Length: 219
Image (tube, rainbow, N blue to C red; front, top):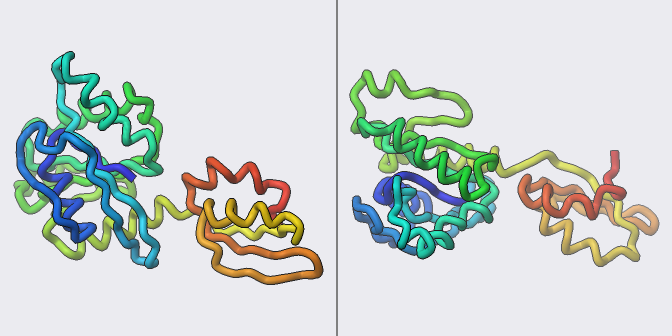
């Protein structure tokens, strides 16, 4: 999962608060030159990796584009993008357009995205009123513990798919690693020469590897 945004401080603060990590925070361009990855625990107890990318700066100088390309392309490996927006910024809409344009250029424009309108405590009532509020857009403060829990819950909802049952013949032990790759195995039972697995799917991984198990899905 990747944190993206126009500049660095808001993203880095969220990374620090969500993961209890010691992360360098500075409200300036180029403060984060390399992606920073930390593990984060979801309400279910499952751990995921959260990566803070370099700020998605508008009109990046051409001689720096190649240097930052590998850093920015971290988002292509993410199952979910957290788009951190400074809700109090007068340039908020322009900054969001810049981030979304760069995501398109990187080939990540269609990835699932949660928009986090950060710094709600620094907004005027009028600014807060203008912000959309739905399952894909939430207003938060990185310093509010209830908001941090809400973010974790939304991430868990976005990353977790349906629960499916797979009937795997005993001789197909080679598929066991795939089952554990696509999600969490919550129950295992045995019937004659088959093993029945109940798996709580991880959406991104299931999309990549689920085809290997299609014929074994138990309807």
